[in-house]
Amino acid sequence: MNDVLLEAADLRKAYGPTEALAAASLRVRAGEVVALMGPSGSGKSTLLHCLAGIVRPDAGTVRYDGADLAGLSDRARSALRRTDFGFVFQFGQLVPELTCLENVALPLRLNGERRRVAAQRGRQLLDELDLLDVAGRRPGEVSGGQGQRVAVARALVTGPRVVFADEPTGALDSLNGEQVMQLLTSAARERNAAIVLVTHEARVAAYSDREVVVRDGRTRQFEVTR
Image 1 (cartoon, rainbow, N blue to C red):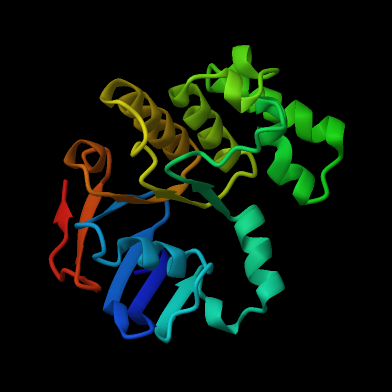
Image 2: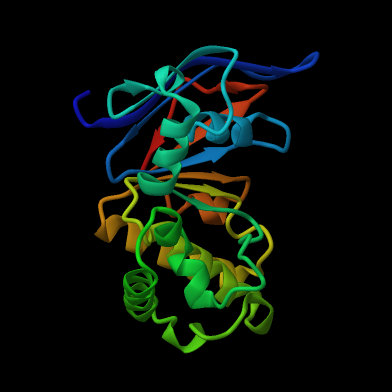
């Protein structure tokens, strides 16, 4: 499959006697939204962390754009997470001391971009996502839904090819959750960015192109295509 951007094959990962992944495999195409579904403790978050190069599997391979992540240095994997990968977590994890604009611009600053240029790009993205009115506020001064949408903007600001979203609506009510998912999926698709989405909620998974069931550390061999 020439359009496969990210591929995991036979991943295994154990934490002490607990096996988190047991021969899990997954393929993600460019621009595709894939939902990893399963109960708590099934291994879906561990699978996401292995795909993102945050956690090293004990066995198996993860290939991104043809390159084996295990063969990259820690510095190279960190660089990927600053440029090619974006992240949205359940509680946003915005820096409370920074304004929303500064939070969005932060990945660019970490990549060495000049402050003024980073702020300009961050402001443009906030404007595009209809969030410019919160640019000067700090995370504690905005609603949970607004904060999570700012986290989406931060994930997209570097122009990533893959966005990893781990329960991005888990701390939100249904209305705000819908708004976040609409924003995340529409903005990513406009940029042809793939999304790997961890969720246990069917209404969130409904935004995906494909669902992959993770149970007992294994990915189900059948994948439901919408």
